Image (cartoon, rainbow, N blue to C red; front, side, top):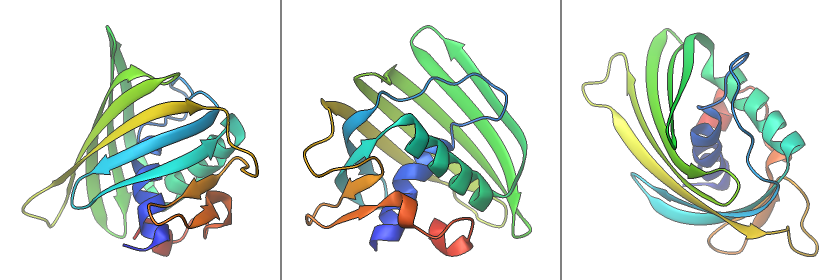
Length: 164
């Protein structure tokens, strides 16, 4: 899986939870270690801040297509988000459950089903805040498992290639 695919997998899970108009808490700014478990398991480190998260939200929402439904519900220490979006003549339903704290450590479980597919897919993301971003890091920097670093703000915006 290339760095664009890995980055977009990470950020699709993060921003599948975003809503226009529904109040959703922001992640704490700083360095996050994010482990994705699904078809592939990998861990990345990402330096983030509110502006970078907002920019990625807009990119992912542009790739997601037209979303007729995006509901956020809070119950106790759990946030549940259900989205129904259409893109390229297909409808995708996503169900995200978030537990923990977006200030320190949280887990997101994403299940999605797309029209035309007999089975859905699921992914779990566990994230832990490590502290402030390191020397030489700027918001948007992602450090891949092999040590390669790139900035998510440099990824193609609003194109289907960013979602692969």
